[in-house]
Image (cartoon, rainbow, N blue to C red):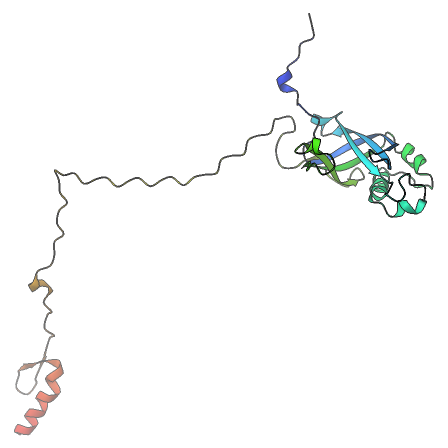
Length: 229
């Protein structure tokens, strides 16, 4: 009887989620890049988050250049980015800096560092075979305690990626109900001419003769009384 397992629950790749990880340095060894340049290869193992514990992360620190592939000139190390990132890793691991780089790398073994990991899609610029493949890169190295450990966002490390929630759609307005032929709409009542006829402006009662005179004509009406007197 063979060993039982549940393949559906085992991730297909070792790509890490974006977030801050506590790593143990398994080793930093000098090797050679595909283009023949000197480089150091760092092997790191996840300690936390525990859902990713034991997974590896690899970082290449290329120190050779086109003019000095083997990095024989110590001045070359002052100009290459790979040497600066490697120095940052060693400082984050609290390694005492000496003038022998190999001794410093050996001293980093089994020390812990925090790496800020993100995911990128390979553009195939270096190798067309890997175009479109998701891989990890480290955005920065920190001493344990400098950065809180945890994944980006609120997704669970053990859970598969959730599909994006569909955008909320505005519900369509209900179509107006057709007017039944059997019940025609009642005509709108319009005011009659009598109702719309302007009402006369109330007049003013003359105190002399008692006649009600339009307000606009009242002053003239009073003057006529003066002429009569």
